[in-house]
Amino acid sequence: EAGVTQFPSHSVIEKGQTVTLRCDPISGHDNLYWYRRVMGKEIKFLLHFVKESKQDESGMPNNRFLAERTGGTYSTLKVQPAELEDSGVYFCASSQDQRQGGSRLFFGSGTQLSVL
Amino acid sequence: GENVEQHPSTLSVQEGDSAVIKCTYSDSASNYFPWYKQELGKGPQLIIDIRSNVGEKKDQRIAVTLNKTAKHFSLHITETQPEDSAVYFCAAGFNAGGTSYGKLTFGQGTILTVHP
Image 1 (cartoon, rainbow over the protein chains, first blue to last red):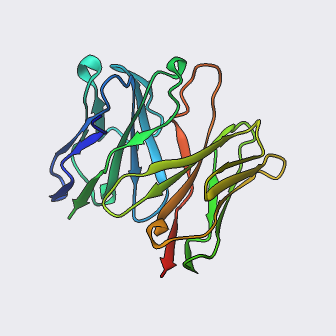
Image 2 (image 1 turned 45 degrees about the horizontal axis):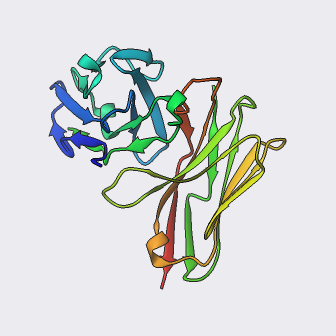
Image 3 (image 1 turned 135 degrees about the vertical axis):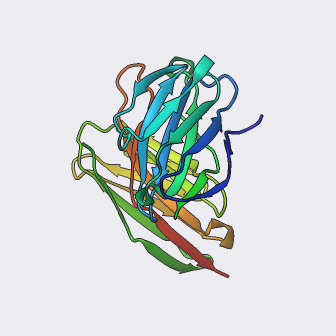
């Protein structure tokens, strides 16, 4: 079974530019999450999709961040325009429907974003 | 909101020794406490979890204990091996009915080094 896949693994951009991160969850996982770890600190929740719907986006830092999950499959996270403080590792995770016994989060390897 | 504190930030042990990582949480409503291991270049991987109706859980060389009254939970690794070297994260979450456990509050992480 393929795991959670994230693209790109690394991205280096200049302040003011736009970057789009992509996440392919495990097939059949309705729940998709984005998390971020900044400067070696704790991993922080950004948002949660259930299929194509945003269930909870309380962790999104500001309106420069836009997440989508069209069709309920893969998801993208766009940062526009990027700022220095956006640098960090962006993780995507997925899990099954809770009613099917899925509570375990499966994480991707992350995208290391560096804004210069 | 929930706040999770994790200690120590770094831990160095000799192979065969035990390692203990401790976390405290602030929200008494939290009822799910997973532990993740992150190896270099990979995403966090669930190694063990505990729910608030259980005080202790063990899986081979790893165990987790939970003290709900004190809002403490700990990870214990016995007979450590060099391959246990990684970053370990504790987390806290809340599940009500069918709501996913996926929105987690993480600790800051512990870098565990096991010396041969």
